[in-house]
Image (cartoon, rainbow, N blue to C red; front, side, top):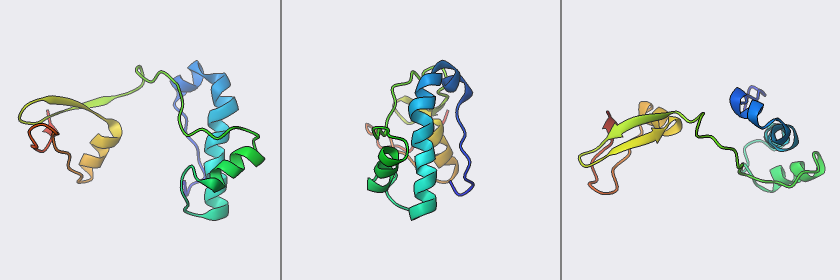
Length: 112
């Protein structure tokens, strides 16, 4: 956010151009504007909602309906009783020292 730069997944953009133009880009630019104007506030709080309404005349929405199956990479982790496909975000958190436990056996998840 501090770099005032937006990156979009090329395949999602290609498959959803109209939605990106109408919703995703205003959504993300609103985050940049809010960061610049107000600093660190709630990501989809009243400041962001206000920018979405007043600047882009868009209804604020915090989620999308894109099919991300083809672009979602997962990482295999195991515990003492099962195997899990973790998201890139959780995998990166583990690389930074986070720990996740299995809800069934309570063992720490480890890379498969």
